[in-house]
Image (cartoon, helix red, strand yellow):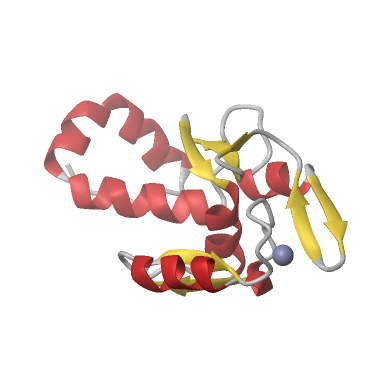
Length: 135
Ligand SMILES: [Zn+2]
């Protein structure tokens, strides 16, 4: 069957009807749609978008957006489509853009639960470790 604009209600209904087959045949399209939805318009059942849920739990202190929700190893955690994601990475992707493949986000402010994209810089793992030891 013809692939239609994933945003239209008709296509959504068709997608549901044929989802298993569609996913099997077009994994790359499913991934692209998922990514676009996650970054922009996708709203999980009855929930606000991930970035809104993050910002609802942020306390601004000296320019840092300190995430007060669930944390793991000091990093804010947020559930996106049933998967745990690091809140600062979601904030960066929504506010700035995709994090380059293989890079980590360094907190320039050294506050691991800060989700202010201005305080985040994509660096290699080695550089991140080097900075952590230098500070
Ligand atoms: Zn900060």
